[in-house]
Length: 408
Ligand SMILES: *Cc1c(COP(=O)(O)O)cnc(C)c1O
Image (cartoon, rainbow, N blue to C red):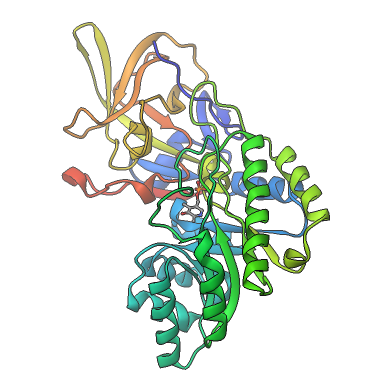
């Protein structure tokens, strides 16, 4: 038997079924018209942002990184709660604009921005988080051609990283950002050009559950921003301090203590050096805002035995939930939180493997999980599906097509 991850708080049990925002799994399936589907809870997202604001210093602004989940109704809801949106492609720019958000509320990071993407972003007034000197020169030239001074910030490749981070994106050679020691010179150069200087972006990693690690990374980020700004001899209008707040996916994971993170940050903000005193301060979060508010529902189509093990075969799989299958940046596969949604709260009765319908051994949703006995027609819920589910899975693989999505 292998444990499954912890089921996030905020779901209900109604008539022995899992419920999201007070709607039973069977009702959600009827609303969507089919399985598999992602159901996202509007109120869980609102509550999450409210508790973040409560924990963080008032001065801190919050951006949402839309690559976590860009389902339009969810995006519109999140946009109404946060201060800004982080995009990472021209396609995401289109998605956010379609949600009615203006370019001034967006910043655009990501290596390899094409000229067309730079042009669209500059025209819309989006802040570019520059990933290289070359990109800086292209942005200035495009701004010149358009007659619009681009809004430019520099993404720094920091000389440290967020410890215990699920995905390391800072420290050492990286395709992201400009190495810290070269940033002052580039900052002076672009400020001397025709642009609106928007400061620095320092992202140090993702999926941290240890408050101490986040506190240390934030302190290092503020120090680095201070050193760069002093060396460049400039004002710092804005600092995007990155994010990295994680959520518990696996057995034994415990939630990040945001109260501790917030009070440590408040202490630091009390005594900021002059270089940072007037900067707008942002954090940028994806999974922390939406990850736990989503559940993936998939129906059991077959139940079979093989060499003494039970297999529950569903109509979903890694084409929608790549991360839960263990194939999205994980070294050792562990079970996501999972339950039989149509027998929610029933006593576990057997050990079963839950798999998807793709013809590949990679397509596993739970290995040897202790579950109530489930039959063909029952609905399986995979939790922590609000981030990097639909947006980060190969939905064209094997031709089953994308899952339905609803916000309730
Ligand atoms: C992906 C990403 C984020 C969001 O990461 P989460 O782990 O979902 O919070 C934030 N900022 C940048 C630059 C990113 O690339």
